[in-house]
Amino acid sequence: MSFVTCQVTPPPPKHNGESFMMQKLYMEGVDRAIASWHPSRNKQNVWELSGLYEGDIMMPSSSGESERNAILDDTLRWHEGVVPYHISDDFDDDEKEVIMGAMDEFHQKSCIKFRPYEEGDDAYVVVRGNNPGCWSYVGRRGGGQVVNLRGRCVQHGVAVHELLHAVGFHHQQSAADRDDFVKIHWQNIVPRTRGNFRKYSPFKVTDFNVGYDYDSVMHYSSHAFSKNGKKTITPLDEGANIGQRSGMSDKDQMKLNIMYKCDSSRNRPASSSSSSFSYPQLQSFWDSPFDFSYFK
Ligand SMILES: [Zn+2]
Image (cartoon, rainbow, N blue to C red):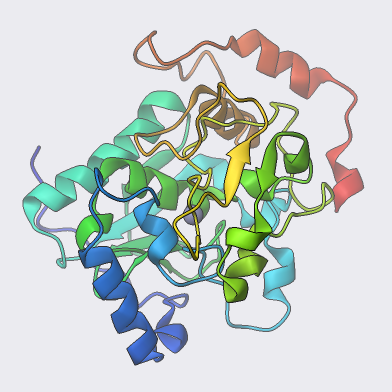
């Protein structure tokens, strides 16, 4: 893969997490935790170690905005699924290839279109690695927003996860109906991180009737925020596994396609192996009388 060298550099992103990063000692701890993380040894997902809300969600600093972080809010979606981006020079070519590969998964599986930032774009994603951790804002924020990937965060599954946040996804286990599918083991959770296991009301976040997804790349691992090495969240379905790190699940793909009203004739998954749902099903969903304006 070759990289464009004459890309336009956007203005500094408005949503850059810098105020949070001022907590230097804390963030140095994040750096250490992530540097010692290893995929075969650690039961947690690396992005869970980023020290932010729910692990890796950067909240907007302006007051009131945190209450708007809903997947149902159209204003937080990218217009026509186009996401202008800029990848900073914090990354070498191999790392850039990983990040572009994650964007390519979106291109293969949905109508989301990542394209290089162009002068005049009023909203864009800046992928950087200059701060500790793997993190993102949820949804389109306007004025430029950082997706941060440093060190071991530069992996395909992590990049897909953070980019899904940037296009509007929350974590799977914060769904309103999650207690029907997983058990939270509160006694094993680091006390100050209990808020990370909060549920959202169905009036703020929807699953578009796709249903709970153990296999989502947006699901916590079973040991997320554990204080004692024991599990903090387990599937009620004993055959299910949670916390996969490889990429979008079928249901992630389905939700993304519904969220952005992807047109099946324009965009089909490139390989048949990863898709088990049919697009006519999505069409009938949009044709149904379900009224989304109810949530606004
Ligand atoms: Zn996340």
